[in-house]
Length: 172
View 1 (cartoon, one colour):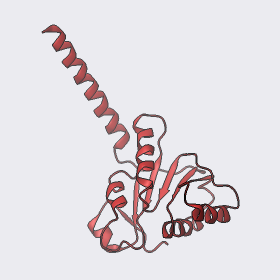
View 2 (spheres, rainbow, N blue to C red; view 1 turned 120 degrees about the vertical axis):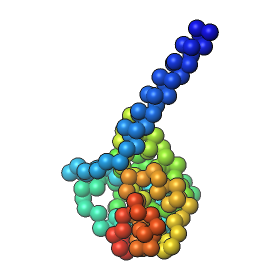
View 3 (tube, helix red, strand yellow; view 1 turned 60 degrees about the vertical axis):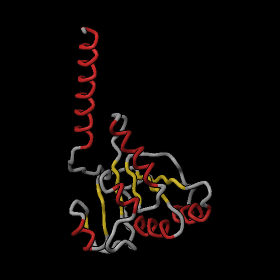
């Protein structure tokens, strides 16, 4: 009886500590970028790479250095990014993840979120829904809508359906 009571108390304490940790990490708060912020860009193949490069063209130098995650089999994206940056694409995660819809971005964003939950490093997740999505979110968007710090849509109909999202107009 005494052992069961101690075990129940320990399990309760662990549950409370986990709940407090999740609340601290996941609560909404304004994120103010520093003068310089390392940026991790998740490059999907085809049109996703073209869209993400158009987004990067408009970012200031405050979002540097830039690091890229590219699939080993995606030689076209690697070539486009190398041309865009003028040097070799790096694959190391840093302080901010910017992605726009390829399915490969979901596990990366979840990993970034886990870094924050575990207290290792706070990583800002910015998701830009593809310009092709006018009325409904992509599968990646449906998942990352709940996990991202900033969720950007490019159509007012999506802003109406998803009030947490940020509508900036057509940015790609």
